[in-house]
Image 1 (tube, rainbow, N blue to C red):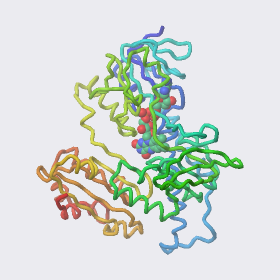
Image 2 (cartoon, rainbow, N blue to C red):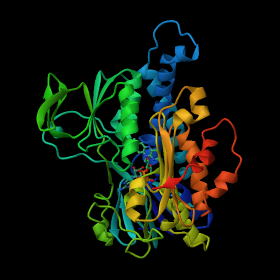
Image 3 (tube, rainbow, N blue to C red):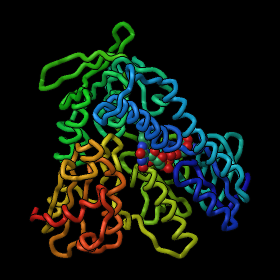
Image 4 (cartoon, rainbow, N blue to C red):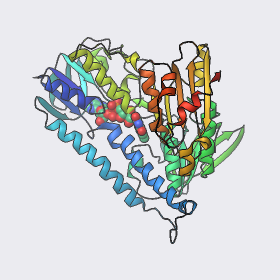
Length: 457
Ligand SMILES: Cc1cc2nc3c(=O)[nH]c(=O)nc-3n(C[C@H](O)[C@H](O)[C@H](O)COP(=O)(O)OP(=O)(O)OC[C@H]3O[C@@H](n4cnc5c(N)ncnc54)[C@H](O)[C@@H]3O)c2cc1C
């Protein structure tokens, strides 16, 4: 048995900074990783996909070059091998950075292999047995594979295996119309694939407001992504080596034959093979580890951070979990999970930046609220760039004037949303933004103008 002050399981977005903080505080730390250092974001999530989104944007703009008075002689073509190589290089640098960081940590020892709890304070990795009074779980998640008949008999891709694609799928069928599926759909359409999204619900990205879903449908539709809504996939089969989705849409059966199938119906936590029973760590009905406001599990001395606790699902939320844990453990700063304002971006082009409540959530809360919207056609910066799709909207509390939520679906929306997010964190009234002098020409400069149009919800 090797003894440590702390064990960190998983090197996702919370584990490495946490291990580094604990080690620099003088604790002897064991770091366990079964796969590639850096986890999902670095290897199969944010970094590689946004790198590929950038390639897709370049292809798209090259095809639009004439709109800007730029001539490109000959056809615009995409070299998928080079797209993948660029992605591999950027993602690989990040991975190597995390690996070297962890392996070079003074007071840290890295173990490569599958971690499994043996008790509340011991963990096995291969032949090794490690013990510590503090154990931090950062095991992340993976793609959910739905129990649709025939799926297990055909080849399909997930966000992980998509990373090996160095060719152009002739017709990519994407099962699932939420953020992972949408990003891949537009990306591969821009690379030149035919793309069909099969979404069983009545609209795309159902957590968003209906007007956002509708605008995203328009954006993807304008580029030729075929979106099938209310499409229940009843089974899959294979025909001449190709995947066939058997769907029922408005009651009528239909077959969609693709060249490749991507399954993107959601994520599940990597908690099934961690031996949590042996430690007595409680999970909820969806196998997420139950945590309190400080990310403590029901077992004293065990914490769960990142996607596996079900309170985030993003890189920034996982990193914030690290901040909450270290603030409480090392800095005598009582940071809480509930201090966090939900925020995220959807990286289609133009992107969606989101902060706080949706309009539907504001309506449900029954709070007296005001709402303002502005189409991107009325944002000078968007017009100048020739990227006028989308709109922005904001909701504020009619009584205390605080911002309840906002969405910017439009060029630069992933950045501009932060001027709203910061005011929300400051708990300041929206009128502060109206008195700020924003830079011209930007998307952010129209936020004060939009706020001048607030009307009762
Ligand atoms: C396609 C895609 C795109 C995404 N894009 C974005 C985006 O643009 N922005 C954003 O904020 N988020 C994005 N995400 C989500 C983001 O990647 C995750 O939320 C983020 O990586 C946080 O994960 P984590 O820290 O919980 O753990 P992870 O990054 O999943 O890491 C967990 C680590 O634990 C290891 N592990 C698991 N079990 C064990 C075990 N038993 N023993 C040892 N090691 C183990 C794994 O190998 C892995 O390295 C995306 C996700 C996907 C799939």
